[in-house]
Length: 191
Image (cartoon, rainbow, N blue to C red; front, top):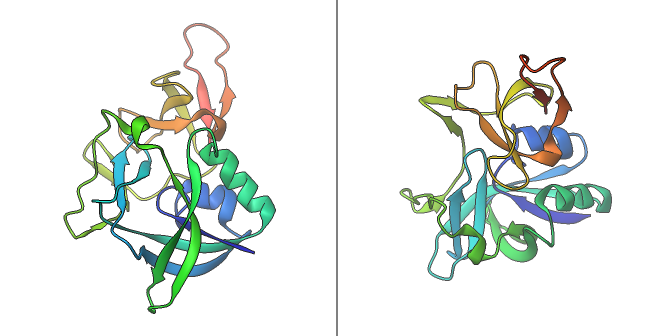
């Protein structure tokens, strides 16, 4: 088994945890990075973490996963072409230290993205903020209307009922497509 630190949609209760980690991994515990060496960026519906020697500590969950689950996470995160999986040290809530893999993006890919403020001395991504609504998770079987098929390369923007009018930007590999029967109908996607 391999330890994996997650900080975004793979955390407990979020849609990728539901799809990939729930019932297929063992929670080790909530953890904080031992070193203040990270910067977090807002990519609309998920966070992006980059190494930053002048950065902050990050909070997330540590799971034990087998090779098959790790491969699914690698695929989701685009390792090694988008994110790169690196080993770092994390401190569990009880004080024990563990070494775990974490997905980091090369810093040149975050140019122009808004940086998440570490106002509490820690970086923590704990909610979707969609318009004025705060949503903790979207069901993995939710069906939504495609509002922008390519807001940026590799992503689609989908509006889910009750989750704001602007839509949520999702990686293309996380959705299944259902196309309208004619030009007047909106295309639909489901997680």
